[in-house]
Length: 549
Image (cartoon, rainbow, N blue to C red; front, side, top):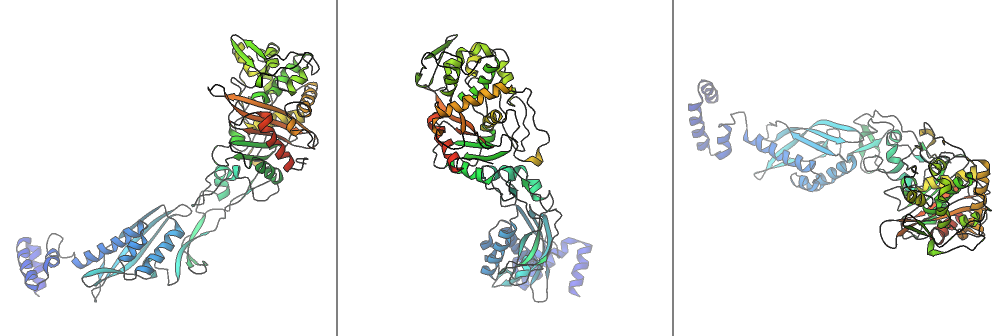
């Protein structure tokens, strides 16, 4: 009845109650906690429930922070708690965990049952929310969380854990044979959350994952076998769809092995002239910028294929006698050949092309003035946007604005820019006789770029003759004697402001007896013939000389 009287007094006026309560509490020896029960928090805030709830919240905070050992230390079974919490958090990999204790209730034994709410953000699932409960007991004047498997989730039993089960399997990136693509420069990687982090895995992540819905379910799993025993969530995603590429595994392996051992950044790309299909893409290093497809470089003398096409169209013939002096001067700018070589009197246009005489091309710039060089580049597909199915740099050959600009452009310098893919395509265009836009992922290509102009068959025939001469007696002699009838053009492209200038090493070419064109580029790699040439030779030897069929 006394307790009833106190409550009645509290309703009538709070002042007298506090005085009586304090006297009763102190007389009973309950100390501070007893006093708090009847002070500002009101009589319904049992101090033991408050203390037990606070202890559980500490446990939950440590769990949410990924500190399994700290959480375990707040329980009556530290090792078991740490082990299960580590298992759950490792399996689910939540990006955010929010655990909040509710209002506890004391039982007849003085133990406190405290409910809590869990919200775990899991990329492959979404927000995983559930309600659970933990018991907190007082031992030796300290509150301790009673730990067993249901403490973590009410559906768990001893020997079980929570885990992710992929129900919408991530599809694969495939080569042209339908096997898993082995090109590290293209495939890249998938992160811990199952998302594509690089290359084709990133570009086609939605297709490969099967959409943006939950691709996994949270399950109760046996800790020993890993077998799922019950599903706690349901997936909404559909199975992923494979991405099929044009990569030929044989050619890709040969390209990758050709770059092994190089000490400079490099790229090698191969295409099928008849279709434009990209057969190989290899970069050193494999990560970061995809130099082979999206690199932006001056192509140097490999661009002389385009310049030669313009000169041939203007009437110059491979057998015409031309001069190849040590220097060529244009408005105060001096152009020279590599190591300042010259060709003897009586040398032909074919000779200057094969041996890569810069001064001959510079001195004949008048034949390709105005928009002629730009127009010739358009016949090779340069100047348009290429829909390849991947990020690419598609080259640029602007209309010349000065005589100096024209002179440098004839030898692939000034504002002329290209990627190794573009230069491989130039070689492929000579082989095929017409431009076929490169393609990597056919199903993703909506509209292939069509060249704005076509090469005259006579021009094509002369280009083939001169590219073969480059191998038989010119700067491409690294390929001499290889089977497959290789045709080529070398290039040493200056860049930067240093004196003497640093250079990229290039070689492009195609096989006369098979459906294969290619480009090798060594970034800051020296000379086209001396440095890129041996890499191209290694690539062709890796293929057995015959190339792709």
